[in-house]
Amino acid sequence: MGLRERKKAETRASLSWAAIRLTVERGFDSVKVEDIAEAAGVSPRTFNNYFSSKGEAIAARHLDRCLGIAEALRERPAEPLWDAVLHSVLPQFEPDAAVAAHPVPDAAQWTAGVRVMLAEPVLQGEILRAGAIAEAEIAAAVADRTGIDPQQDLYPHLVASAVMAATNAAMTHHLRTDPPMPMSRLLTDAFTLIAAGLPTPTP
Amino acid sequence: MGLRERKKAETRASLSWAAIRLTVERGFDSVKVEDIAEAAGVSPRTFNNYFSSKGEAIAARHLDRCLGIAEALRERPAEPLWDAVLHSVLPQFEPDAAVAAHPVPDAAQWTAGVRVMLAEPVLQGEILRAGAIAEAEIAAAVADRTGIDPQQDLYPHLVASAVMAATNAAMTHHLRTDPPMPMSRLLTDAFTLIAAGLPTPTP
DNA sequence: GCGTAAAAATGCGTGCCCCGCATATTTTGC
DNA sequence: GCAAAATATGCGGGGCACGCATTTTTACGC
Image (cartoon, rainbow over all chains, first blue to last red):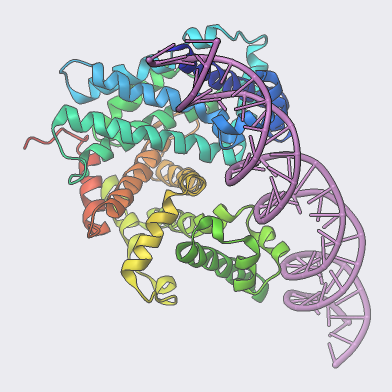
């Protein structure tokens, strides 16, 4: 990757991070595009060269994570499908280098801000759409892995859709519970249940 | 329901239908809120008393359908969960009275317009969000049916998420195939696969 | 019927957003 | 270095979402 592309990726990440941080701190409507551009050190017009809306900038990190699932899935060895899926999703929700680079002062306050942020309707749509975009990649990976034609057969897209559904359900439950249940546990449970056909538990 | 509420529902449906029809005919960006309001016989300002955005108006019908799933699920008798789900989802995708009231001149042209419409990013987000809203109702219905606390246990929301995932996958596959595969077949296959744990088919 | 209170529709003004287009600046390949 | 391509910026317009005040419509008790 040349200097050109690296700088582009940096600007993109910088804008996305600024959008998230400011929104969590001040609330979606209180943050103007101008503020985000300033925080990232570019002109307001440049913001829209990278993202077509404020929401898209905020959802960009989620999009990257979901695309990472598809990428990881392609690198898994031959193994049962749901084992491969679980081990592709889990690492995306571990704290990584990108998070470590932006330490958060007050964790509780941050979480509260994230909850408020995710309550914003337009954000919910944007985040779900990010998942849908990644779904196409996941479906393609599943198609390659199983040798099933996604144009003709529903199976690959259905699996991809189920993967994102389980991931979303785990994430919302993570945010719903207080204190938040660990994602690793929720994801493991979710995919185990899916692989078992979601049988009604007998209490 | 009194006259007041009925008229409100009528205006809402009228606005939503006008938004959809005009968008399918002319394209999302070519339709102004003013046009929709005019077609529904209300002032532009009134439009935003019913919907907070153009996209929301277009997605409203989808939201109603998805909420109908939750409602139907509550009325199903005691039976295996996935039987109840299938029989709750299927009727929502049959041509109903609401569709019959608005006959379409050219079916092929209409379908093409719908495809273009659904390619609009903001619409995709809005439609997915409608599904997410309905998910909460479905989760509540599943919680009642199974007696599982949705606050504490992931299961109800996971099932609801899977229901919408399968429905979405069926719908996108319906639009992807040419000629469109019938929804009834796709939905039946999807829920059968989900109930079986999405095993990799052996060709 | 009729008056009144609630609710809905409307008109107006504001701030912001998204994008097209023209221009300036930077990077790349030679 | 230099020309070409890619990127960043400045400017302006069309439109959208919404707050607020006002008018019109509806509901209901008498």
